[in-house]
Length: 516
Length: 101
Image (tube, rainbow over all chains, first blue to last red; front, side, top):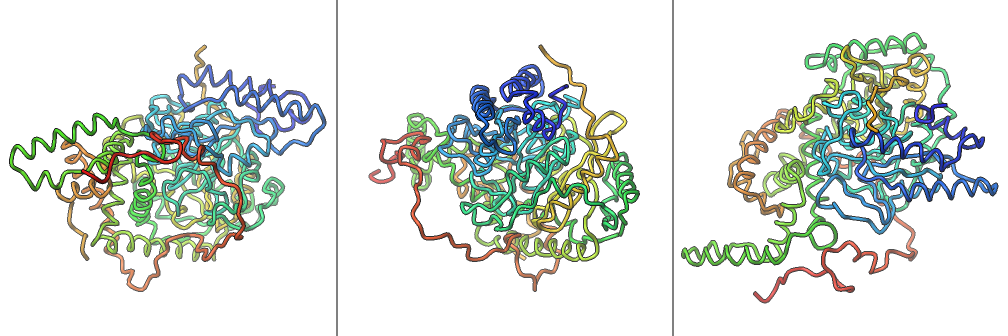
């Protein structure tokens, strides 16, 4: 059996029956990473020794007849935004290039307790800000389907790792589409859970009211398996929901008869790629064959979602990233050079008789902050911090941040009203398939506009799933987005699972040339 | 409404860079002024919506007063907390002198 092509659910069975050991399985995936990842660059770091040690321990437990967890021995990749104790957690940033946190994120603790073997940390846009994984200081990840194109972002490494069979399960994070869009570009399933469904403790913060951790895998069944492990209340995250976690896996086969699917016609208007529209409509037709009914719904404020999102996310980011000050952890500028430079600036100002200028010159501590942050952050992160700082500054708060919070309420109200009429809302994930590397890096606004179908779910806090539903004529993946009311992840997974029972898009894999 | 329909000036961007504790070169300041101006122009579309009577939504969960049990539990040791610091003396973080210039 081809272990690389097997689903995580199958791997659990093979490990349970003893057909394969955890150590052997881990070696298979580590070999695959070695042969593929010089090309794809999905990983920021590979923790080979720790993974093999974990696998050995699991094999011993099993041999001793001891109980093991739900994911015992399954190789998992984790986005480099989740803290792993004593292991590099770089967030794709020079600021954290050598940062090894002193504690594990709750999601990591849960994965370890379930026996998941952690292969390494996946590449991402710097601090999860981006839609192409090009802002990573490690360099971009390539799309395994077409290496000239982006895998999407910010969880580009997480999606590419699954697409290229370098991990059977992947954990990402989604603030405005960062799980769903790369899942769509790479032809895998990705789920952004309800806000509060998964603990954010140990997730490096980008925009705290929008960030949510979630699973990526080839099948809905595997996504359900991983969600069951990582979801649940955590007293260390006061925004995590104190609600029981359903057995998602057991609910996958409940019939879809009578499922009401909402379609937002304006989402199919100008700007949507023709092949995507065709595949998405065909996917909806498959649901009708499965017994679902289709109804038009309206989300009148969704056209304001991008503006609302970029204000709120940037404001929250500017506050969250204030912690990178060169004092507590992470990068710090060369202090000697900084002090020399400051003395030289002062000398020049005094010599030229500019007393005001000399007076206003940064003090050493402020200059240390400013230089550290200038060196540690990349362009996109600086842009977002600047936008957020501007929008929160005196005189602009009401016009931007407060205004955006009010529009956010309208966007949520639209969903509440729509979900009175339908059970799920179906539509595209992205307006285009994976775009070429470099195409949008100099035009931030064009990069932002690509997020139009995904950001609303974060603003409203609802769960949303990206499901492969086709390929373009040139062989690029296309995906369907399904959104549901809060805490109805089971409904999304059930719909996705049964779609995969009728279609074979999830079995398609890129024909990646292996370098050996 | 203040702040709307006005693109950013170079002076605005310089001031924001100081507030954000970022040191930007002249080239960066110019590029940033242009790019932020475009983004600000785009987000100004929100001004066309009447939101007078709308309650702001700061958090999708809208949870209030989440209290933890008042019970001490072990945290990280000082050594662990200081382990990532660029400069420390086993007791404190070290930073450039703030006073006494």
